[in-house]
Length: 515
Image 1 (cartoon, helix red, strand yellow):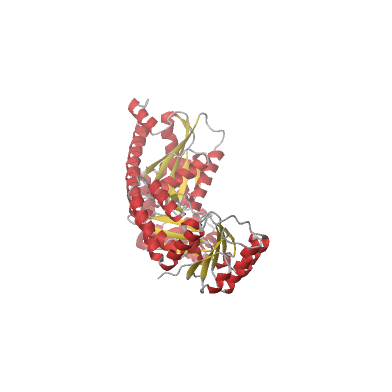
Image 2 (image 1 turned 90 degrees about the horizontal axis):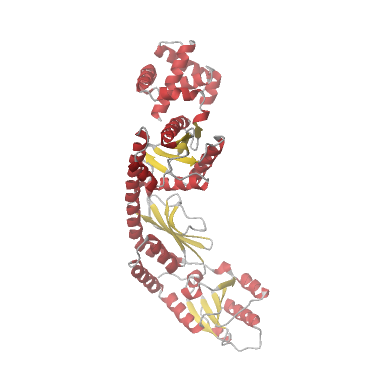
C-alpha cells in the first residue's frame, strides 16, 4: 500500500487553500494516523506518525491562541507527530510560533474555514485507503472528460482535478496548448515512458502522446505542495486524457498539411503569373491575409544538416518567433524550408533593421526549440505582386549562400552578397553544375572528400599551406602533400590564376549543390 506523506494530505481538496505557517522541512514525512484534538492533553495517546487536526473553535483555555498552538506543537512533536492543522477559526500566528514550527520541523497549516470533524474523517480515509481516493479521482476525471469538446476543455478539467498547471508540449518544451509550467520540467525519456518526479516542493508528471512521430508530444502537469499520491493520480489522469490529445494533434496536423498545400499552390501561381494578378488569385490571397501590394522584403528559411521534412510544430514556433520581433508571421512551407515576406507601405531606408529582426527571431528559435537548424536569406525590397516574385527569388538565392556557412542562425541579405550575387545565376545553372562535377571528379573518386576539403581550404586561404593547415588542424607538410597529390590527379598545377579561380568556383558550386 502507498505510504501517505504530509504532502499528500496538503494536496487534499479541503487543504488546498490552507496556509503553511512553517515547518516545511517535514513535508515528506510519512503519516500513519489522523486524530482530532480539542484541548491538547489527549495528544498523550497519539500514536506514532500522527497528523492532528486542532479544533481551535472548540478549544477553551486561558492561553492566547498562538500560545495554545505552540503548546499543541510541542506535545505533538514529543509524540513524533507529523502535521498539525489549525482549523475551525481564524488564526494569526506570532513570529515565535513560526520559528518554533521551523525549529521542530513540524509542518503547521492554518485552515480557518474548514470544519475540523469533517476534515479529520476525510484525512483518515485518505491515510488508510489511499487507492480508493485515487480511484475516485480517476473515475471523476473519466466522466468529466467524456463531456469535453476541445483540447482546452480537457486541460481545464485536468487543472481542476489536480490543482495543477497542465499543458500539451513538444519534447523540447514548446507549449502547444494549456498553461506552461512555472518550474523546470524533467527531460522526457527515450524511448518515451510516463515520468513522475519531484524537485523540491514541486511535483511534475509527464505522459507521452503516441502516434506523433518525430513531433512527439507530451502531456505535462505540475503542482506544488504534493506527495506521491498526487503523482499517482496525475499519471492516471494524464493517461486517460492522452487519446483526446492524440486526436487533437492528428486533426491539427491534417489541417496544417492541407493549408500548407493550399498556400504553396497559391504562392506558386502568384510567382509564376505575368501581368496583372487575376481576381480569383487576389481573392484567395486576401482570404489568407496576404498583402500583395506595398513594398515586400522576401525572407527564405532553409533547413541545414537534414534531408527530412521539418516537424509540423516547427512552422508554428518559427512564426511566433518572427511575430515577437515585429515581422509578419506569414510562412509558406516549401521543400527544404519556408518562404515568407514582410510588407511595408514604403521601402525601408536600410536593410540592417530587417536583418537584425530575422537574426533575433532565429536566435529565439534555436534557443527555445530543439528543432532542425535553420538559416535565412533576405531579398531586396520590391513593390507589388511582381516585386514579390523578385524579392523571394533574391531571398532564396541568399539563403543558399547562408546555408553554405553551415552555421545555424546565419542570415544573409542579398544586398550584402557583393561578388557572390554575380555568381548566383551561375550557381543555378545545370550546365555549370555538370562542368563543376566533371572538374572535381578526379578528386572525388574513391571517396576522397578529405582531399577536396584540403584543396578548397587551400584556395580560400590564398594558397597558403600554413594557413590551411591551421584551419584544418593538420600539419603543414600534410597539406603540401595533399596539394601535390591533387595537382597530379587534376593534371593542372595550382599556380595558374585562371585554373585556381575555376577550381574554386567549382568547389563552391559543389558545396552549395550538396548542402
